[in-house]
Length: 143
Image 1: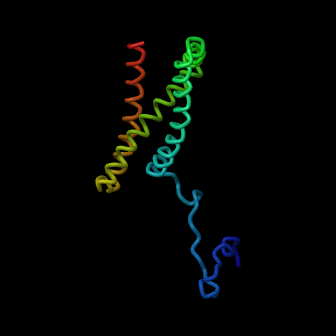
Image 2: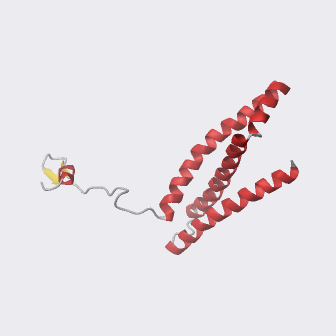
Image 3: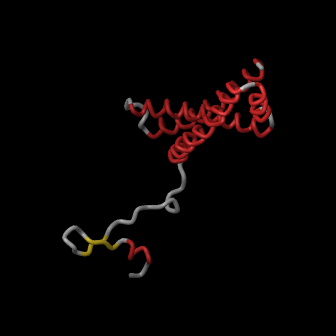
C-alpha cells in the first residue's frame, strides 16, 4: 500500500474474500457549485426557521401573559439585536419558501436540465432577497 487511502479501500465481500472498494469523494475533491450550496442552505434555513419560531412563540406567550411580559419581549425585538434576528428570520423564511417552490417544480418533473437548474437557483436567491426587502419596507410603512 503506497497511500493511506489504499487501506481505506480494502474490504471483504459477503463470502469473505478481500475486495477493493471505491473511496467516496469528499468536499476537498469537488469545488462547491450553486446546486450544492443552495441545497445546504435549504436545510440550514429549515433549522434556523425552527429557532425563529421559538422567538415568535415567546412573543405570543408574552402577549397572552400580560402587559409587562409583552413590553419585555417587544423591547427586545425592537433592539438592534432583535431587529437583526427578525430580519434574518424573514430572509430565511423567504429563502426556504422560494427554494421549496423550486423543489415542488422538481417533484413535478420540471427544470432538471443544467441551465434551468442554474437559472432557477439564482432566481430563488434573488426572489428571496427582493421579498425580504419588500416585507421590511411594508413593515416599516405599516408600523
